Length: 290
Image (cartoon, rainbow, N blue to C red):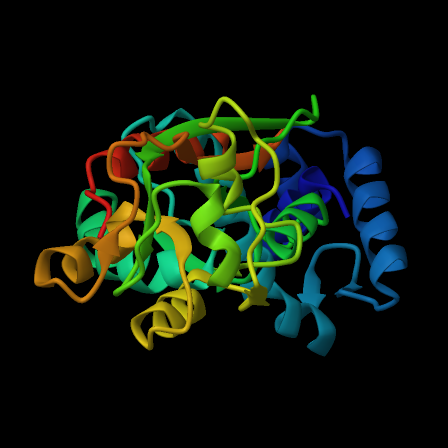
């Protein structure tokens, strides 16, 4: 069902005369009648009852007429819409983030982001970094906020914020690796991704002889256990800033500068909303970590 055939149908419905309608659309009577025949064939219904002088709409034609006219009006607007550079088109983005960062930083920022770009709706998905990256690769999230370093050529990223870390405890005293023998280290998982920020900053990156290790799967759980006095850990400074200020935690080895990292907004390429993702990254850089 092409637009020219629909225009022929509309003209015939207006004039109820095929010869007059064919002149209106600039076709010969034979070509006009063929257009109507093909349309009826495509629809599987007769649209006109014809005599030598007049044509009358059938019940099927009368039912179809308002829909055809709406289709033609919509088609006429396509050029206008395509050329209207001032039109604002709503769009949605699904952003993946770690639970703690999503709760403390991204969720409180949504209202501000909505005011800055009203046509954009941001949906959040929270999970750990491997889950976020897997969902991004499957197209279930548009982008992920992560500090994980990626080397794949199929992704692009924009740096959002530098991430500083601190080695912290409560009443423990640590000056070197020898002091770890009676302590419990609390980290995300058995490969100690957070403690690596301390190890990688030392001349000798050898493992420390901790008495025990606990794995909590996320920084919120680690913080809770540290506050209980269970052990020591490396945590992002933004996440424990208030604890350090209030004296609930103590920075261990404060003279040692830990390796830094960065939060990045990461997305697959090509991505249909890449300019919008870059714009979101620019806005997120203006939102302080908390």
